[in-house]
Image 1 (cartoon, one colour):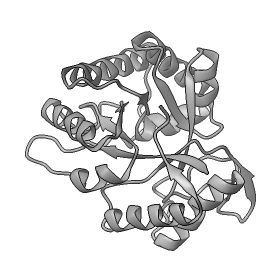
Image 2: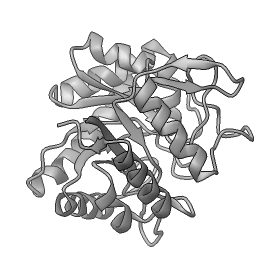
Image 3: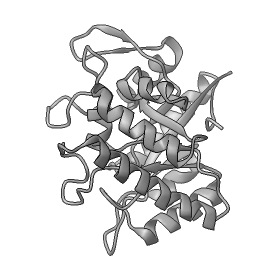
Length: 252
């Protein structure tokens, strides 16, 4: 059987604001990316999410982003490699503290939003992130967009890496994700998203927005937990994966 990791961005509530369907989604995925308080989340939510993940048997990863609550970390911010190194190291360390509190071994780091997308094409940013991960804990797996500069930087620094693909996002011919401000950035048809995931896992390719077929590697698939039909979609995706004899399992 083929194996694939299903990851989901969770722990994005903060204060009195509830975001996502964490409790319902958690049992259906194998890895979770926990917001670390910069783009979303807070100390209470981080602690609670790690506890929930442990109970559900899902592996935990840090989801560091730009310090941008108002923009949910999706706005590009120009800053220095030193600043990126420090805020990524800080956020990893914060979540790792809650993992230790709950007797959980952290599995991975996945940058969030604009940080993730900028690092995908910027080798300087990617190296700052990879160095922060290595210095925080060299046993962590670095998640990056399949074939991106972030994957290359992780390998350069001797980290284990995971090529990430997306269920509900469209791709540009160069392998980057279509920016969210464009109309065709998101796949809203569940069946189309399922078919895209199956193609990426079984053929290591995806159809770009211009109709071209581009190669990629799929180690982990991101499914979003905060959409209107997120829970139903993940259940449908798992059903289809099982039908195609693809096992859902964490990377460690």
